[in-house]
Image 1 (tube, rainbow, N blue to C red):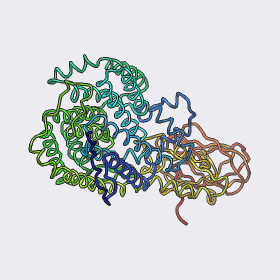
Image 2: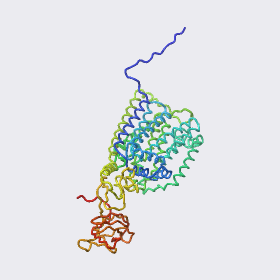
Image 3: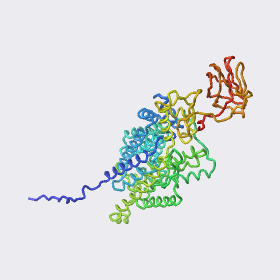
Image 4: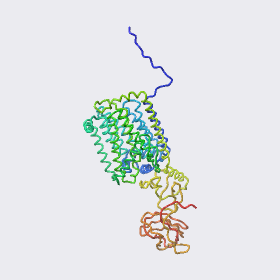
Length: 617
């Protein structure tokens, strides 16, 4: 009778359980989220965040608000999330930060699942995952609300759409076309740039899954998977019809060929290539916003050499298939560069357009997918004629047992160290927040000022919200979300102002003053008829703040006008007083009239100009 044999169980060691790819992937994702949260927490809301929240504060959840364009962006779901978050915590940054980090966590997990779906298993999966989750080029999306509310949903839509496309290619099941369309629609509800997802999945099918040369691959892609392209075309046309009916054209013409070349050089040399290696290593601060890339020239050349070397290695390893994977990145990057060139060049932003990471943060998704495909190779379930990677060269097979894992580990450590260095330095720049300090000072002073203190509406400092965001750079809009915010008036006897740091101070008018009056001890006497008071200089047609200090023998009312423009009325109070008011006008004199002809009002202190903090003392 045969005796059954048993294979001896491997001996237990004191090392504990062996590491697995999913476990290390989870650790990388958690570590990336932790460092992103720590860096973002050093900052605060910034620039466009305040107008977005002002809009949310001033509106209810109406279709008009949700589909209102912000900076020419159609983002109904972004408005919805901003509206809800504002009502949850007001100006508290933590709810916004928590949502950004939660969004990044979701995107990271979904991206890892996409890698598992698409690529051959192995430790090399960690390379594209690390490139993506630690990329400094996506830091703005996890720290700056106005960027993250657009870009994180777009990245999520791109990843889900690619996954649905791969499943459809493998199974031909139409349910995956529905998922694909839903993913694209998700992105479009947050950011119109998500329309590029349609181009991405088509290019992905052509480059990675369709057989043959360029023409055959395109024809095969169209013929074999036409239901997906039909649905996406109809969805795209429908979205464009809605968007173009509401938007204004953002298209611009570059001013010169040099401007275009500088932009391309910045985008590739200063931003993308260093960013894929954990760079740019040095940043240039630009006030309250996120810093822009500023790598040293040597670092730019080093990044170029290393990226080209990595591409060359993958082509040696996987042959023409790796080249097709990198072609996918290039084609998508051309689309992004074309879009940026058409909307940013020829504007005030053109000099630095190629140095802004958020403009190409979606490219990181494509680059990480391509790096994974070129390095790991694709799973081939469900299709037999897709372009295949050539067998791994014999030299690589011989070297892999001795060098494979150590080289991979060393590369990941260097990439992580590079990214960590860059991320920390980004945090140093991100921590500088004039808006946070301005708002904190204002809130503290508003709690201690007397009841009845009033202000006139003025712009906040340019470092907080720029004038290009008008009218949302005005204090009435900026402070709108505050529960006990300042009260704004157009006239008053005592006016307070916020200085450049946000502190409350007494108001004063700086500008053109009236010439001295003819009466000793009175200046100009105003009684039964209007009095023309000459100014030292002519003032241009605009809204001016007028301050009149006067002495009156009774209570009455009066009007004032500049030149021949419409008069503005105000109350006159007995005794020594001053009156501030906003008046439109132009001219070289000012007319003052009192309603009661028996009144005797003296004034010799009149100023026309802008409201400023009163001089010390």
